[in-house]
Length: 185
Image (cartoon, rainbow, N blue to C red; front, side, top):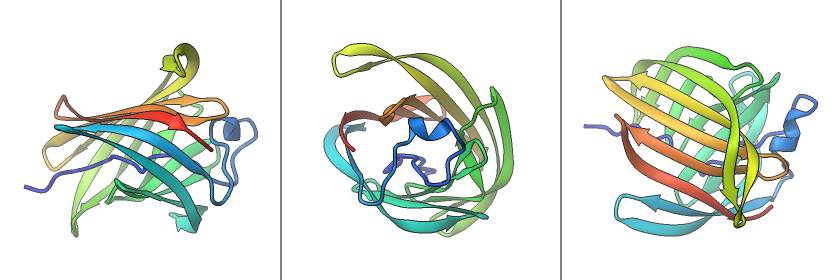
């Protein structure tokens, strides 16, 4: 059975941001963020680096890489979209951050060379996240993706001036990975 994995090197940062949105994704080529990644029975510390500009669908975006894989992300208007997250490819790119409260997606999901149809809904909200020992305001984005009889849920807490401060990934309701910000850019 192929496993759908949405885990990033996850920092969703890209150039060409709509005014105001880029404050949630401060990006410059070469930036690096450090994260603690909790998965299954192990915990690792990993860096995510902005490597180089790449095409993400029809938009100009960035390739980010780390120990957990590669991601291809770009701003398309006021939406942050992902053409790839940790080895899972989306055609067209799937939204992971948007100004609108609800955004839907229909497309193709490719995992290990096998392509299946998929649907998704991104729900944006506001809340707080524990960050550097205190609670700070965040924008939350919860992507619920259905493909090949499975449901993946990726919830990201975006902190202004930092990017992703926390991220949780669930597969069929079970928490499979959690990412917590340590430092950067």
